[in-house]
Amino acid sequence: MDVALGDVAGNLDRFDSFLRETVGNGAALTIFPECAVTGYCFDSLEQCGRFAQTIPGPATDHVAATCQALQCYAVFGMLEADGDRVFNAAVLVGPEGLIGSYRKVHLPYLGVDMLTTPGDRPFAVHHAGHVRVGMNICYDAAFPEAARSLALLGADLIALPTNWPPGAECMAANSIATRAMENGVYYAAINRVGTEGGFPFIGSSSICGPNGKVLAAASAASEEILYAEIDVTLSRRKHIVRVENKHEINRLADRRPEMYTLLTEPHTLPTPRAVHAG
Image (tube, rainbow, N blue to C red; front, side):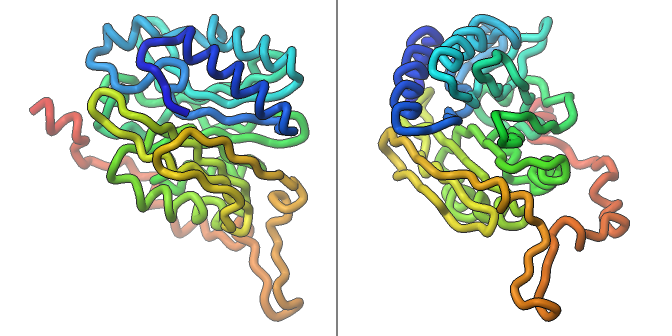
């Protein structure tokens, strides 16, 4: 979808319209883009703070009421207010209300992420009916450890609300299928379209299956709704037998975590933010 910067009420009204359409076409879970409640290209923390909300709060209550009326689930992006901090967040709601939320861990030097606080909570998996859903946001997809953490926690589906700008075309074309395949999960990367704050967004949303196959894909410029079916028996079958006793793989059991200790050592590289400030 396209998103109107700062028009929370208008964006939520469009959520309702989309949910009525997707549920009418049989969807149990609908995923919206990153910061779809608020927009993304804010110029100051004060400005984005005017549109950030608590979780739970008015926006989550609104979408939960719609999900209760339609008996469905939704994942969407918003700005979360927590004291004097603002987080780029994703939320899962359903007929029972707020189910779970996630704070974006990896922040690029772009848009509202120049202003928000990095996520400070562990990765988690939540239930949307019988499907186990993990959430990442946008730039998180560039760090395979994020998706792998959710797979280890038992995710069937990773939902990635995103705001990909120009420069992310290869991410859209290649990384989503790779994250799905290397973890044996469904992966839905849902990008916005339109232009905001001088940045055009590149669309190209996709839903990929546990073998990396693209199940549905969108164009670069138009609002579109993608549909795909989730079979949890496939996402939970990590032991793949291609030729019995000759070719078998298990991408989780075949890991060698003892060889990856370098990944957990804090780095000392300057962030773009620090370089810019200097």
